[in-house]
Amino acid sequence: MRSLLNRTLRPDIDGLKKSGTYRTLKTIAGPVDTTVFIDGKEVILLSSNNYLGLTNHPRLKEAATFAVRDYGTGACASRLIAGNLAIHEDLEKRIASFKGSRAAVVFSTGYMANIGLITSLAGEDDLIVSDELNHASIVDGCMLSKAEVKVYPHKNVEELKRLLSQGRSASAQATYRRRVIVTDGVFSMDGDIAPLPEILEVAEEHHSIVIVDDAHATGVLGENGKGTLEHFGLENENIIQIGTFSKALGSLGGYVAGPDVIVEYLKNKARGFIYSTALPPSVCAASIAALDTVEKEPWIRGRLWENVARFKRGLTALGYDIRATQTQIIPIVIGDTSLTMEFAEAIFEEGIYAPGIRPPTVPEGKSRIRATPMASHTDEQIDKALAVFESEGKRLGII
Ligand SMILES: Cc1ncc(COP(=O)(O)O)c(C=O)c1O
Image 1 (cartoon, helix red, strand yellow):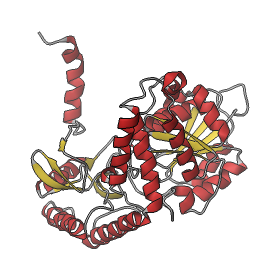
Image 2: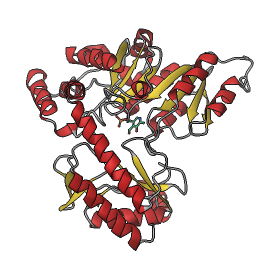
Image 3: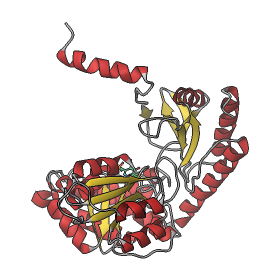
Image 4: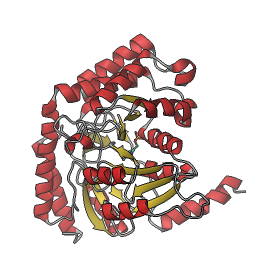
């Protein structure tokens, strides 16, 4: 007899298979480097968020190793009980100063940072206005918050303004307690940058709090890699910046950086901070070493931008649609989901790993390969990827 779980779950799984949205895992043997072994096959990795290649940097590895020796492998309690190690506070001070903020608090992941921040800041009496292409963790935070959520068309500041100036719907109260604008700094699937200066103007006009998710900008954007604010030459201690150590910084963990009061508030309100075990010390040590590396070795970021430019130039010459990307995230939009998945499989067979991204991660009809060159790729690896994109794109009639 089929088990209860099988009876109730199998039809949903079959539905995913039928709709072409069923997901499977590919197993990487060994470290996340410019080439990896998948199913015994060596392929060029072109889809990691290890943008600066830091996950293999000796400084990070050494820092993590020493931390294991000095502190052991886990914190084994939440920060408010018995898990608050000196290294957590060191990391918070370090990320706050790197981001130009007064204070910071770390969470287990960037996902948890968004959920914790948004659900603490906004509730029933509040309004959140969110860009339509914001990351899933922002969307989930909005849903869980119980606030009224309005979504504005991608980067459309006029519409953002209009939504903020609307009165409160279906409530005895005429105004909201708080208005919160939330946007990715660099959009995770399109690689374009939020119009932060204009958003800040609108926020000022409408007395709104601004949250910028700098997950894909930290370590990468701006002269010193500090992120979206630095990219625009902005200094603003009142903006709340969230981010993650798990992408360009090659480690793990999320952070919220901003004024002292938001950090004090989150330590008291954010359930993901209060009811979850603190990060392992080795992870904090690696993150601190990553920030040191971003500051001490700016050439790594320079190398990333060279690779990005080389790859984008090649793709554009081949006739690919790479949208309006401004960063290291390069969407190669194919549109049709099954053709995108076929193309991803074809380039994998030819030695390039950059999986297809399809709905619900991206909108219907906008399936794509999300390619992300790393600082550590060689020119030869970028050129090999371009050659494969050319041969397979032509074979499948994409270009
Ligand atoms: C924009 C954005 N925010 C937040 C996250 C979540 O970060 P983490 O992977 O550390 O949970 C991601 C990455 O998945 C992201 O792309």
